Image (cartoon, rainbow, N blue to C red):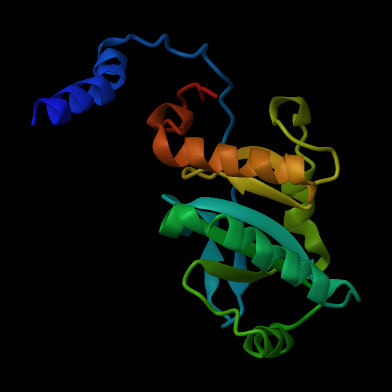
Length: 195
C-alpha cells in the first residue's frame, strides 16, 4: 500500500506544480470585423453567416463544373475526418459554384454527404469565396496567398487561410484546437484577439 501511495505522489507532483504556476498573458493581438454574407443552401433555404455564430467554420469552395470536383470533395472529406476530434464545434461550409440546387442535391446524395455539420451553400460565380479568400488587409490574416480553405471563428472573423499541404493542415488543426479550447483566442467583437 505504501508503494502505491509513493507512486501516486510522484505521479501527481508535476500536476500540483503546474497548478501553482502562473502563465503570462499573451500580447494583445489584432481585431477585425466579422464577415457577412447570405446564401442559399442545397435545399433552397437562405442561410446567413449570422445564423452560424457559435461554431468554428472551415470554409472551402467547390466548383461542380470542374473536372477536379470529385477529388476536391474527397480532400474535403479527408480534412473533415482529420478534424473529427473537435466534434460538433466545427462546421464545414462548402461554397458551391457551377451547379444549381438540383445538381448539387444529386451530387450530395450520390456521395451520402448530408451531415448536420456539413453545409453546402450555392455561391454562383464564386463571389463570396473571392471576398473571403482575398481580404484587403491580408497582412493581418495568417496563412497562405492562394488558399484552398479558410477558418472563421465563432463570431465570423476570418482567422486564417490554408492550402492542402501537410504543414498547412497541421496549422489548421492547431488553430481550431486553440479556438475551441481557449476563450482568449475568440473574444467578443471589438476586443483584441490573442493568438
